[in-house]
Amino acid sequence: DKGYDYVLFSAGASVSKQYAPIAAERGAVVIDNSSAFRSDAEIPLVVPEINGDLLKGYCGIVANPNCSTIQMVLSLSGIHKSYGIKTIVVSTYQAVSGAGNKGIAELEEQERGDIRPSVFVRQIHRNVVPVIGDLLHSNFSTEEMKMVHETRKIFRDDSISVWPTTVRVPVAYGHSESVFCETVRPFSLEDLIREIESSEDVVYSEERLTPIEVAGSDLVFVSRLRGFDDNRFLFWNIADNIRVGAATNAIRIMKTHLGGT
Ligand SMILES: NC(=O)c1ccc[n+]([C@@H]2O[C@H](COP(=O)([O-])OP(=O)(O)OC[C@H]3O[C@@H](n4cnc5c(N)ncnc54)[C@H](OP(=O)(O)O)[C@@H]3O)[C@@H](O)[C@H]2O)c1
Image (cartoon, rainbow, N blue to C red; front, side, top):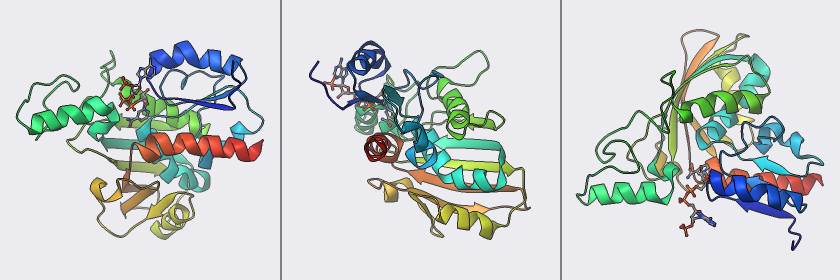
């Protein structure tokens, strides 16, 4: 009732489902970090550097995508525009902070010796857990299906075939991804580097970067780019999941909306 211009929600899907429509009805632009509205056809799912045009003149709920999807589409956006991405095979190495504060707390408790799993389905300390979210009948997980649907929605291209495996690793901050792509049109690796370097908020690096080195940054880092032929390539993609994959994207949505109104 106080008439806020922007309301940011980040307390989980059930809180968003209950309260976000109320804020939107009162005239606020609602930026929702949860998964509550991401697959709703009427709700824009926005990574401003890619589809920020959807925000122009828009009023209502805007969904912030899943963390693994945001950093992947940021690195692939220019390449998709120029060469047309046909297939993406991605394996993630996701930090425990992706499960919120309780994820970090569980890793720290296990490091101190209490190895009983509760947030994660198996011990995460000195281990990797190859399931994030719930397993579906198809044997894909809910986290994996977010990457499939959200990538297509953000790129506005349902023809892209996405094959994800999402894995939790005992890292505090920073998601890593091994990404394989096949394109419609041929390229050279120099072409790809040019596309990546000209992408907003993405950095190409010849270094062997690890998540601990990028934690705290608002950029996505692409490294280890390689391929055997002219329509398939692989790279290592890392970003701070809390910043690029959540908070920074939410703030970028607000700033882009402010700039366009
Ligand atoms: N972590 C990530 O990488 C990431 C990435 C993308 C999206 N998200 C989404 O962001 C949301 C928050 O995730 P998170 O990782 O920040 O989780 P988190 O560490 O568990 O934090 C959730 C916060 O919400 C607060 N909260 C819970 N219920 C509330 C209520 N009814 N009213 C007001 N505040 C309430 C909690 O406050 P108390 O501590 O006082 O309970 C806590 O500060 C989730 O929807 C998640 O899916 C997270």
